[in-house]
Image (cartoon, rainbow, N blue to C red):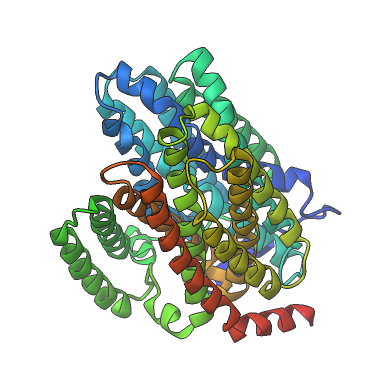
Length: 474
């Protein structure tokens, strides 16, 4: 995968359109990007009803959440690699078809194994949207002679996701309350169908980079052993995180052994899936992954931990707790939009880190007697953090990742976010292991303070961010 194939792809995407990033290009990409947050946010109000229908406990339905996150964490960079090799439009379509299959299977399922299969299909399918969109945007920018697209285009991906998360729980509660738990699955059918139709009509065809290549060459270019090793490492790690507070040390050891073998393999691979040398040499990119993962870890701790506390300690229903979190999601979308209109990244990232720390400190003062409006205000701070951080880290990745690998790099950015979300579940599970109360919330708050402090130090003292802004200015 080199300059020749990339240039061919760029030539294929040349367009006489006066608005290369107009609505007909970006709308299907945004539609594809919202499929994952739709399925992440709408399942929560359905878990109680699913448990009753499947004759299991509510805790037993947690696998429907973890299966989607685990599949997505592995599939995001894999989908990016496939998009680089076979074309982002093709991979985008395959992803949408998997989402449709998962939506249909979930809507007609009558047992838990079928529902888990449906969530795995949905996780794999929705993982194609973001890395394919980033690669399509990169190639469109190159085709018209731009080093980078308008910030509003990248920001739009974050805004679409944040807006979906903002309204997902509330809309999900309404649909599921009126139409049953199946609505959490069949909602994929109209949304994915619309995304497919728009992409088929408006996104230019990929160049034919597959014909004439031997199966051996295709396997070598994909680095299937690297993908399998990455998936094994991540699966074992997430099993360990999910086992907390009773740690499964065997899973951690397995993860470490597979990771060591993966690094050894990737250092020798001709076309490594996980470019270890790049991560070691391009520390700006590596710090972006870590900063994004830690920021989302802090945000998800609030999203999940505070929701449980609101229901158990404050007596709110799941639907009411979802309504409380709407301002958080709405402000995330607003701050993402604002950050996307700025030319620099260092300022928004520092502001985001400081807001994360301020929000963490504020949670220390929450208790069962705190007015609900004050709780909403605290969650709103985390919304501002999430939106600005998401857009700015996405922009840094776009600038630092090699152009030919932006699909894989973008997927890996999302993977770090999923690791953060699962780690947040481990933190809340540990804090609330005996009872969901104010004491547990205090433990969560102190964990948040520590996470936020690390993000502040990483961001304020990252001199490369200032260099990135100077390069953009020129």
